[in-house]
Length: 282
Image (cartoon, rainbow, N blue to C red):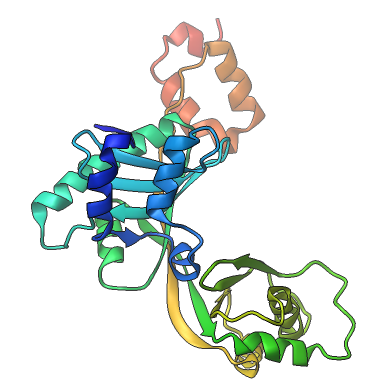
């Protein structure tokens, strides 16, 4: 039902990409990901490409995702062409593609497919229809390039914070994205300003800040540096059931005694299918 991207898929992909949608908001906003470029790299350097372009047999639907073995997560990046919610034939075609993608992902050890998109009326209904569930929603703030200048001014005359930064910085050709990794008792404005100055005094692009919790202290720090609320970022997850191989009776006994909280439901199901003399250990 699905296959990897081939050279002769190029013209169809170029046409479909014009009607595509990003499924990774960070990639779309800061321009760290280019669908056509990623597909080309996967053709020329298949062993080095981190992005996989998948299509159906007819080469009419394209899905791009990133998976780094042996990781258990596949991150969806781009889908084309995006169907309308009132196009039943197109929707059913994509449902078949996702069914095949889930089977492929399970065979490659993935436990979930993830899409992170802004809260809107187009992508979320589509993802929910294809079996994705919303697991978390983050607040994202945006600011102009001047926020970096304010960060330098905020840190003037201060010593750098010695502890590890609670913020992660992603730099792109059209913007930057700062993600809050954890909360700390420190002044959030100082930690955020220290992350911003890594962009350099000559930074001239928008900056986005992904916040885990909008506490009054964080809101005050963001506003003081020139940020304003932009959108809500939804983490959508399609969980994948990994098929379990049927172990021998001796392995079942070891697995059940070693970690019953993790393996007991699966062990009980398999044990119920074994002959009684094996279950009793005779």
